[in-house]
Length: 158
Image (cartoon, rainbow, N blue to C red; front, side, top):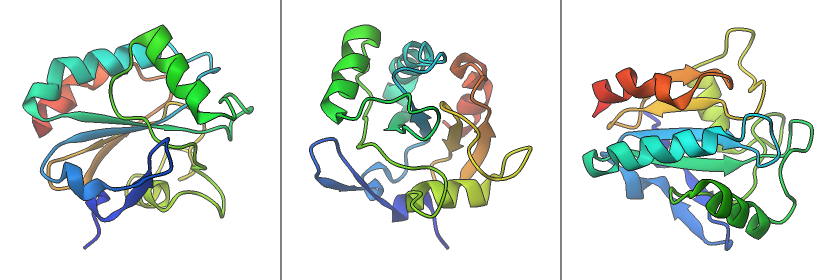
């Protein structure tokens, strides 16, 4: 049976990283965009990460420019922006696609496990997925859902 831990992702420097490194830890996986009107969620995601990281939670950010091209082309610009403006210390990865035939396999899996209200495709930046300690997708959150509203569900998987 497939879990999120079965996938490999690319770090901003081009290195491959197996998500097995996070095995046994709950995750919040989110597609991000630095120029999006919802970019204030970076701060809230960082706050979640800081509040729960000692209990095992990891937030994983995946920059994506598929929605109105709201992500920098240069991944270094993305990571610098997130750190300088929102103090982001949670792992950020290389820019990916979340929809279409070139969608990253991780996001294909996430969408298959927890479809959206109006179909499985990701509708916008900052769609969030909560993953339990077994690598199973527990819940999908709309782009406009504040990360702070995820706390009750996060507490259940910790």
